[in-house]
Image (cartoon, rainbow, N blue to C red; front, side, top):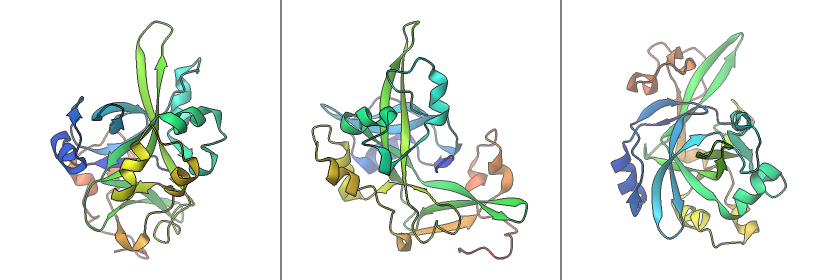
Amino acid sequence: MCGRFVRKRNTSELATEFGVDEVVDELPPSFNIAPTHDVSVIVRDDSTRLVSMRWGLIPWWADDPSIGSRMINARAEKLNSKGAFKDSFRSRRCLVLGDGFYEWRKQGKVKIPLLFHLKSDRPFAFAGLYDVWKSPLGPRLTTCTIITTTPNGLVEPIHNRMPVILSKDAEAFWLDPTIEEFDRLLALLSPYAADEMDAYEVSSLVNSVNNDSPDLVEPATSPQPGLLFS
């Protein structure tokens, strides 16, 4: 799964990097993004826009918005069958922007946080879905989920799932709401190339969602022995 990630660029940098037509919502960098936090997302309809959404998808038909806390991830294999994701897969696909994601390596009774990122250190797009839920009291809430797939060779020793990071060539195809070639869309949801990624141990301060500073993405000063990555 993907339960915590990083977005260390500001909105203007992301807008330039991904070539959006319009920035609707500004968000500051965040180094410890957790479920229910607002995230930077790219959507496309008549134009390509950078907006904010709450992480944790609430389907339009839900009676209780608390379902969103259980919908932070969507398994790629179930997008065409699971009711909570099926409609969004067909017409509400998006890019969730980040620079890295955290996973925890078990060492005895201790869990050691690792930051996975691209070797290029460039921001990237997770494949995502979104939906708009209307409260009985009137307000609308736009929420999203991050799609997961089987792990690549770098992530596999740590976790049996990883978030889908789309290649630059795949981003436009995934975003296009007119595309209904679902087999081709599903083919995009494969593990990112392991040789283009890296991981390293970071401070245990990331374990608390109350901590959010650039220090969290710095390599740990005293790494635990036996770490598999540089």
